[in-house]
Amino acid sequence: MARLPVAALGALLGAGLAACDKSAGSVSCGIDAITGPLVVKQSFAKGAALAEVPGELPATLPIRLVAGPAWHGTVARDSTGGWLVTMHGTLSKKVRVGYGVLIFDYHDTALGVLAYDAQTIRGATGLGRLAIGDTIVPLLGVRIDPAAIQNAKCPFFPDSLR
Image 1 (cartoon, rainbow, N blue to C red):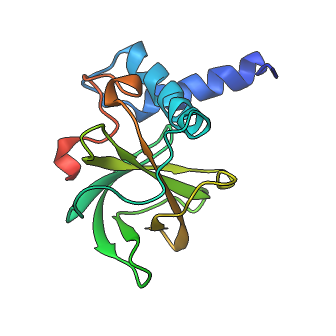
Image 2 (tube, rainbow, N blue to C red; image 1 turned 45 degrees about the vertical axis):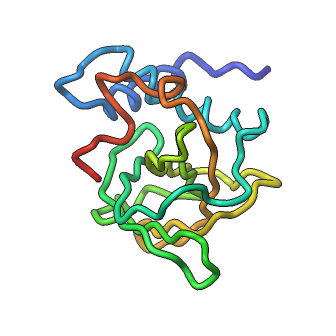
């Protein structure tokens, strides 16, 4: 397993802490901002990937950039019958997004979308598209226990963005 240099680990922790809501302000929120997205990625290897979108199509969903800000998003069907989730907000020109992950709980409720700055996960089924900034990227999906990825004091997908 590759080890991160201390400077890189510090930068990741700093980004995670910056992603937290100021009122939550705990170090655990910053750690969750980093480890939660890793747990989501690992869930693909553990068989939690979705081959089709379960449940109902919500009108809106929160979208969060990994270790970054969250935005309001709207949801519609795309031309193939998949979901098209569109971000409403301003994205820094420095940010690059490679794919999004629709996150569902075990009751088939869509919680939100995590946007990753990486290449898509090989072999994962596309469930639609994520329109974020000027970019349209694949939208994948997983079913996961929300408590495994977020602290209740600093949720990835705040209700205020629904």
